[in-house]
Image (tube, rainbow, N blue to C red):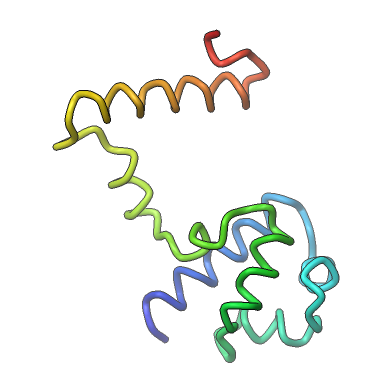
Amino acid sequence: MAELQAVFIMNLKRERGRLGISQLMLAERAELSPGYVGEIESGRKFPSIECVERLARALEVPPYRLYMSDRDVEELLSPEGKPGWAKAALVRWAAEMLGKYAGGDGGQ
């Protein structure tokens, strides 16, 4: 299995778990057959771009997120080697997200 496919499957399962939905529920939301979703998650099939978009909408995430490895996310969020304006933007974003998920106003 290609690394990108493994990352896609891991993220698909993670996002499905985050929403607490079954493969059947995901299939219904994405207007795909349950068997096809199962084949994707088991690595027997890889979805077309159209299906990726359907799955992403059903999971309430942007399509690119399904292709990002944990390493990619860490690198993107790491302030190392980034200019000062980028570091400040990361800090603002992190504060906003923490506030949002902690029930606050993001420090505003």
